[in-house]
Image: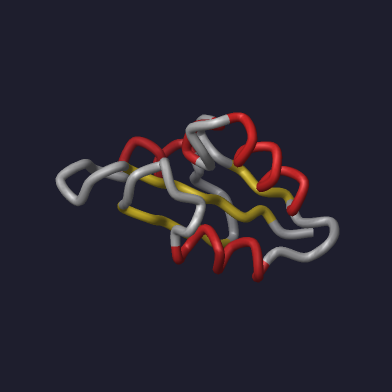
Length: 79
C-alpha cells in the first residue's frame, strides 16, 4: 500500500505549496498546473496509470481532481 498525492492549480501563476504541505508524508506526488475543466491533465493521467490496487490517493480537496460531478465520479471509479 502506497500513499499517492495529487495536486493541481488552475494557472501557472498559482502556487502548489499549500497543497503540498497538506500532503506531507505521501510516497509520491503528481502535480498539474492547468484548468480543472479538463480531465486530460498529464500528471492526473500519469497518476491514474501509476496507482495499483491497495494504494491510497490523497488530495486536499475533491475539486483538485475535477470541477464537475460527472468527471469526478469517473475519476473516482478509476481509482
